[in-house]
Picture 1 (cartoon, protein in one colour):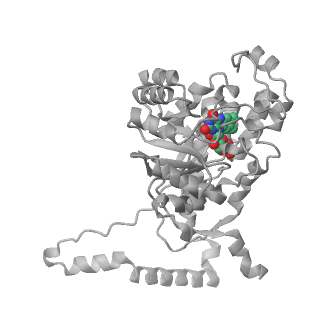
Picture 2: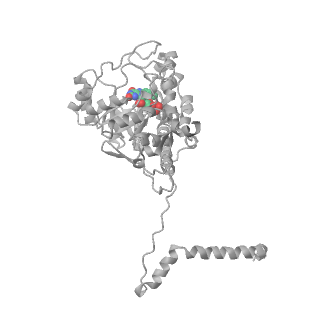
Length: 424
Ligand SMILES: Cc1cc2nc3c(=O)[nH]c(=O)nc-3n(C[C@H](O)[C@H](O)[C@H](O)COP(=O)(O)O)c2cc1C
């Protein structure tokens, strides 16, 4: 026996520990179970009560050290920037004009706070979601972006592989890449994406082809009649860099933004496009780029099966609201008839909780996965999605929702209402 346990103080603490233990045993369900066993006829043992199973720790998959050092989605941007040309960085980072909308997309997430609930059993966390007939493990989709190759010459293939690996829906992918990956059983779920067509013939041919190639939906982006005026790429000389590295080239080997330039893309796109596509394909049609209740209602009236609240990552008209700020308006107009998705500035798992609580079924990301691609290739894209998915689990657990399906407006407090009692 040690000197310490022989002291009177040690004796007292041992006695109190024994008393505490007896108290615990008295209230223990185990004691109740052994009392029942003693009373059971023939000494038959009733089944022991199942011990409540505590959930284990869930960790996102591990990668090499350099990747694991990145602790959030924001940090990928600077890492990618170091690896790519200034032109490529500027092209992706840029928003239109003064980038007010670019900032608004992000700051809108500070306009809503979570009304956290407590004493809810959140031992099981469910990030699954049903979208257009598919059950997805998480609600993070990879948005359509024109130039994945700007971040890596093999960016299209790497993104597709990462999407397959993380079971994410990839929106807009070169069909040749999906076909190649399909042969290796590594094709992702994907939606075909377009900025629209001028004729029924072209729209129908594209819709039919996309269905044959294995797309699970047709996504038409409706907010790009003209290219937005972006200051950052307007300063850059494109041709030399991109022609030299052959990372990107258009017909003439160059793309040139000019201040004040009006550059048409799909200026004659109207609601008839949906009719054209529907006549050629049974795939659901997703309309991306809606910011008002009126347009949301028109989408549903014309037969769209999903609506994406989006301002094209703030790359078209500067001055439109942050997408989270108009999400509720669109969701209310759609009134549950079709799922509503949102993108623009979504960077955290907690952002997804706010978006879903306000009425979104799922979200898309654009720049974050491009930065992941520029920083670390395929693994970078995977890490971006897995980090966000991990943060989503934590946010669902700590908000008291536990699952995406449990989220609703009762989990949201607009910041202006939260401040009202304080500010009077
Ligand atoms: C470089 C770049 C290219 C894009 N190209 C397209 C496109 O071709 N079609 C489209 O619908 N959206 C395009 N987008 C918009 C994205 O699909 C998405 O709406 C937006 O990036 C989401 O905002 P975030 O970047 O803040 O996540 C592009 C975005 C970026 C950054």
